[in-house]
Image (cartoon, rainbow, N blue to C red):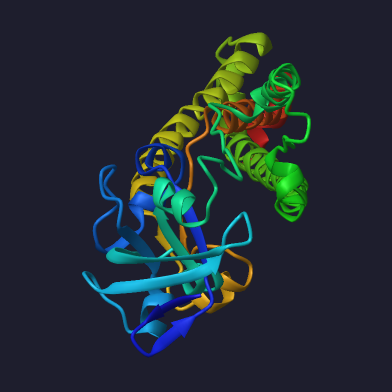
Length: 307
């Protein structure tokens, strides 16, 4: 229970190491008022904005927390509000309190114990190996009662959503590749048909069919340069929104129902860009082959008759 003067509210109080938490989560970046916790500040506390509104609390106010200690005793204490944060998730902003872990351990009679240790890996591909290594170390320390869970076990709904999103993305990319392929093929074919008469003149002047094939094919392939120009513009635009974010203003309530922040930050992926360039390039090369073959089989007389 968190209270200020005559107002009180139920809350979840988290004890964190301020320095380590800043490198692990985005909490230090979502402070909307005041400042983040300092390592030597034992009485500081951070409140969610909506919880602060319920308590009518602001920076510098004193709040009181009351709960049950690990040994069954009464846990209580007074803290000073140092900052307010907004996670963009109404339920968490309405119930979350963050204080220094040493203060919470002392108040709740935990004697230096912790309930959770979170690890942030450089890449998710290392997760299975790290989990196994931690399990071995816990067994060596005779701490078999401790449970090691990866984020898919902790957040199965998120893991399933990511899978569905990936499958949907693959289907969308296939459809997009099909549309792009037809568009490129149509452009190349129209460019060929509009110049049939010119090709007939070249053949009449002595150009060989193989040379005409190479001419049409190379001209078509040169359009791949547009891919790299589009890629450059796309990277610049994505990099800007990666830093600033895309704000879906007015949809906060809808996003909060799913635990999402309406400020979305796209990410530049070398893997995705490589695949996109490869797929479009292959499509362009294949689409350019058909009009080039048609040009290589042109008959001078028939080509000259076309206008």
